[in-house]
Image (cartoon, rainbow, N blue to C red):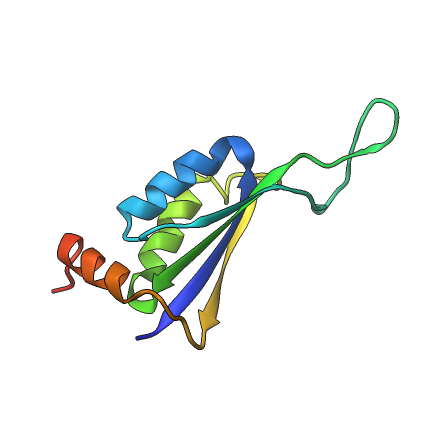
Length: 115
């Protein structure tokens, strides 16, 4: 079975919304890394002239390849990723091998069967 890893970088206040959308689109779960920081296109400066880097969540979602587009579109919409420069990004990486998912796939196939 083929898998994709979706990596979603969003403000922490959007994490629950993105997770809910991913699950409704067919994801069985996710791993969340909180308090990640990074830089965007333009640095955000504070009134002291120092750079402000807001905390973000990195959401890792491992999905079956045939479900990845639906989940990716759902998290993009839920996270409002295409609305402005600073809302976040999502990307998809092909996974060459994944173990420990047999029962997840069986349960998911019952809830969200493919025709």
